[in-house]
Amino acid sequence: MPDKSKINFDSRYSLFIGRYQPFHNGHKWLIQQRLDEGKKVCIAIMDIHDLEPDKNPYTTEEVKKYINKELQELITKGVITTIIIPPIESVNYGRTVGYDIIEHIPPNKIKKISATKIRKQQLL
Image (cartoon, rainbow, N blue to C red; front, side, top):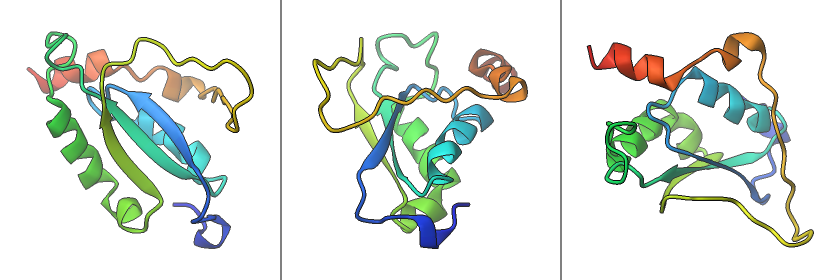
């Protein structure tokens, strides 16, 4: 949980785009990196279930409901918001446009988390 005194509630959001099939500890770790810096987070859930149901067994609405339940306290505080977006092929920009592109390198224990393995366990 970030220190509330460090969060600039007037700031822009750090955007995370994903399928979150399912939302797991690796996602939480990644999001926490920005929260720890006092940044707000926007979780963009791709609406991809109907295009690739084998890889995405949970509907977009189920994913959003689960994330909102897991992060309810932070959403209520206005630190996190969730949105649904269409399937994304790529993220593109042409020049410096007022935001950063940041890569977070997870530790090995987080890097090893596999949503595919989690889904297989959940569906057994």
